[in-house]
Image (cartoon, rainbow, N blue to C red):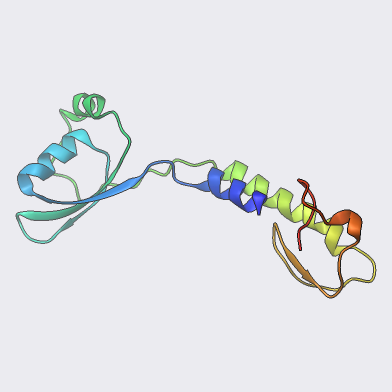
Length: 136
């Protein structure tokens, strides 16, 4: 479970996505002050905007002041994550599970990075509440 939580932590997108319904005037202000992920146009005056949160809005306004505000249909999402670390943690979880999968006389029906289903109980020295021990 800890490996999966660690993987999720490292593989996540760091910015929060906010959703807001706006008119065309508010859209122009958002294009100056926010990082926009997607704009859905209902009609000429109403838009749904998906934008990233937790940003320095004054800095963004200064940076974006001269950007063409009318070309909003080709905006791409910017993913900030570390897939290499997330993949390494997942691989390590699978490597750790090998010591349980290769126990003599035990059949493994399913395993993941943090769990396995077997036909017999694990030896007592492999089960416990301590970090690194399996839990029933």
